Image 1 (cartoon, helix red, strand yellow):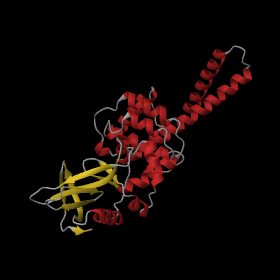
Image 2: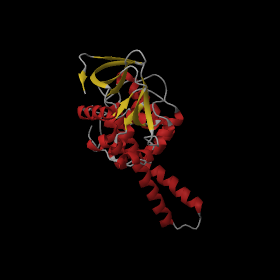
Image 3: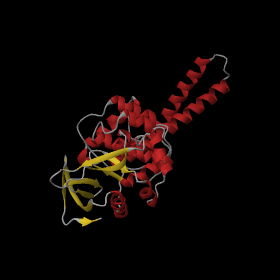
Image 4: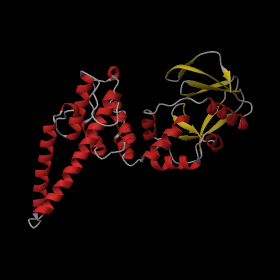
Length: 311
């Protein structure tokens, strides 16, 4: 999709109808995509906003001079036209991101749509517009994917902070919840600094605190196998029988962090898995760590390809 100018809404039928319905609910009036609006419509819209602005200015004080009222009107018109352009761009980006085969029949909550468009009308940076467009597309596909709290957190996020989260997201693991292995020596090797983690905690993507651990208890009479998924791989830790427990230091993602992580396309890093294995071995030399290509997950059941490879 081109970043500037008009683009083609490349979906048809119910997905497009649902997108337009969500936008109409969010902005409080029937929405017509920019591509099918005539130039005359845009001019009529500007005239309408200008007249409303003049009336508003006149109501504030009958003593305002005509030129001042006109300047106020022009400022409001310019602002509202820019807001409409922002909405149009995000809607077009969302159309490009919609998976036509995955759109649910469940409606998007009207309050959610209203809050969403109240926020995105003032988003002008292209990379942030794309982020919001992906949120809109996914919410249309699967309503309730993003909470109102997540929208409010993201409205205060800068492009720089979003990029930091995207960088750190390359190293997010999963086992009964999403987390980061909080070995700062390992993270630093991979370009993640302590200040990056502190920033994401401040933003609300990561839970506060530095002393959270995942505990893995072993059985007294047989080895315990614990699986941690990472992208297209699963890392398997064999904890020998009789070992009371193994503690893994972690930083947990918040609900906001988990919802935003669902938007990020990440590539699994073998270097990270090797560093993870080395870090665990440094404190637990008797634990065997292997990995394999992930096939699927069904609840707590992890299916993977053989053979297992050592880390």
